[in-house]
Length: 353
Image (tube, rainbow, N blue to C red; front, side, top):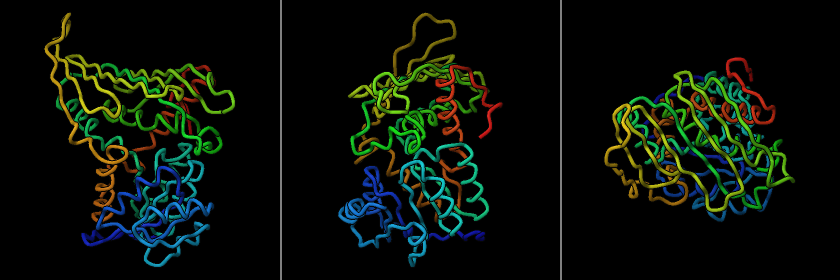
């Protein structure tokens, strides 16, 4: 076990990255543009992926095929895990036990039990564990959270959110394998389900769902599902999921007792309708345009996510997307998948792991 670190405003993040896949370029881009971060080492079993990392990095990182060996690299103080999901828990726990602060790509892990083990290691070693869940850092999502907390739509009653996308790229075949990814819902919907839980401000207690593998019979992960979640505070969430719709179909509606918010995932505008309880018509809409705040390379929110990680490493405070916070998104995905596969309503309080 390692003791607590003192806050240090001059601390520079000297990063080792394990898993140099497609998503990694956005992390390396942020590190390249930050005076407070530096990539010291890459780790991957494939030489072509290491070469790709070296090609897009501004620095001159050392390369390793063995993760434990990378952890001994001189000067390293931070680890970024962007490997396939199957290895998240293994790499994160090893890095925390070796004394490093860690950011791990979403989803946090494949099971709730793995998440719990990761959080235990972070607590025992007094290290930062942050999940790279950039949706909490979207300008649109932050504005939605602000409006909900200000009571702009009264009390949330329900959320409606179909989230359909096209298939994953051919070079991410492992995403279609349950043993490597933990399932399509976990791979994709952890973003949305965490954001909605954040807005709702309560924990999920039940889930029911229908779906299966209708379009891609050669894979063993769900390609479609319709799920209903119930929360402790009585809010219900209707969530549609699919990976066979090119161009995306992702409208979101947050419905309250005194108004509603409408927007699209990755969209730049939020439309706010107000109304009195029992009214037949809504008032004139108010449109919030967040185009300027959403303009950045790659996925929106990644710059703000990195600012948060750097600040937390320096000040030793818990991140907005700390490991302890992100367990419920894994629970919602894994139990949602179970509800579909087992054709039953699942009570979260009765499930363990």
